[in-house]
Image (cartoon, rainbow, N blue to C red; front, side):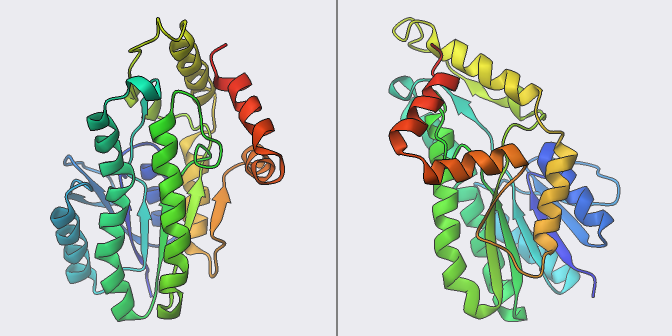
Length: 264
């Protein structure tokens, strides 16, 4: 039976690469994004993941057309940067509405469908910034750490229903995500220019990062696996970093992150 997949935030970058990889693996793929898009070989539904009713309606439309929903990839998200002290609460809440509650909205809409059919797979796109919290990226790290925590709790809640879930943590990926980041240098004088230097270093790493097609291929393989682990990192170096974050003393990890991205 041909599997039916939904990818949120799937019109560019990692999301589009994942959608295409799933399509090439034989799945029928629907892409959700805020704006209309013409994507060859992919079906598109306009939906803002931060709109709970809109996401529920979109996934119900997929179910009505296809009669099932096998895979949900929660990829929609964006980044903000700046000093935690100077980040407005409204900006942080807008980030969480997409990165965290957008995932929650799509997951809650998918679960009744998957439960009724006796199974399904939910893949949440997190980040290595979850276990390795980056200076001047505090709220992005918070959003992805929350994705990991939600996923870990969800796994055991839905396992008896035949539904599996996991979180995949990319590192630096070469996509439009970098240019779309909402950057604030507020307070950079107080922080002696460290905000700008830190963000510039991180964005340089992203621009030299893994191509989105490699990340999309990895995500599609995870989505199609028979069994999944709770967490995955993409790429050998990031797997090592995540492993070290669990093994090394917190003080040492914090010092290394400050050395890399503290903007000194």
